[in-house]
Length: 81
Image 1 (cartoon, rainbow, N blue to C red):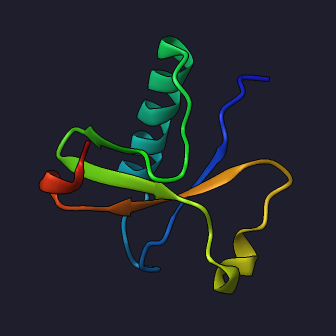
Image 2 (cartoon, helix red, strand yellow):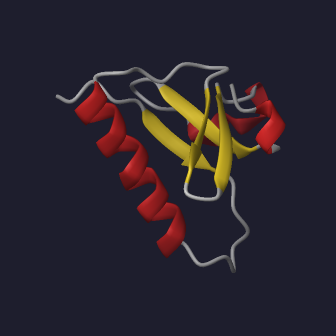
């Protein structure tokens, strides 16, 4: 409907998910309003978080999705393009 891929982030079980859900919401809102796409290898900064997007690894079979899915990973500020 909105042509936005599924997003995943690997987090510890005791991590507060509220900031992560807000982050995903911000990323989706940005892409909906800008018309830009997300692709493997893309990077960005949202608030104080610097992220890269990648395809799931074969060992992350549990992340299978009917549509496109990208895993968000933290990166150093110098890695954001």
